[in-house]
Length: 104
Image (cartoon, rainbow, N blue to C red; front, side, top):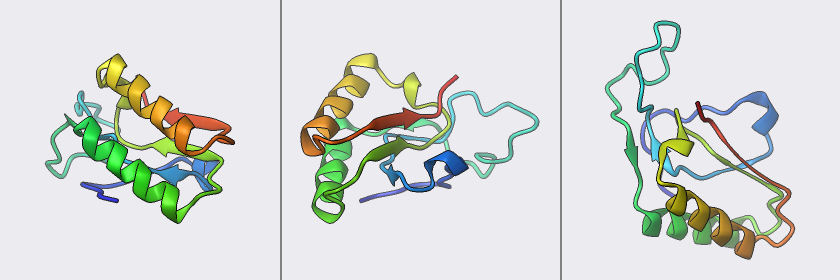
C-alpha cells in the first residue's frame, strides 16, 4: 500500500484499516490546522491505485471490520469514484461494518 504525506486518524479509528484515497486537503487555509502545511498539495489518487491498495490490504488483513480513508477531505473526490472504491471494499470484506472519511 502506498501513502503520501502525513497520515492522521482520529482516536475512534484506532483499529481501522487505513487506505489513502486522497492526499492533502483541498482547502488548506485553516489557521488552526497545521496538518498539511508542509507543502503536500491536494490530489485525488487514481481509482485503479486505490483499488490495488484495497486488494493488497485484503490479502494482508482479511478480517478487517472498519476502513478509514484518511486525508483532509476525501468526500471532495468525484462521487462516482468514491462509490466505486466503497463498493470494491465491500466486495473484498463482506463483514465490513463501517467506512469512514474526513470531510467538510
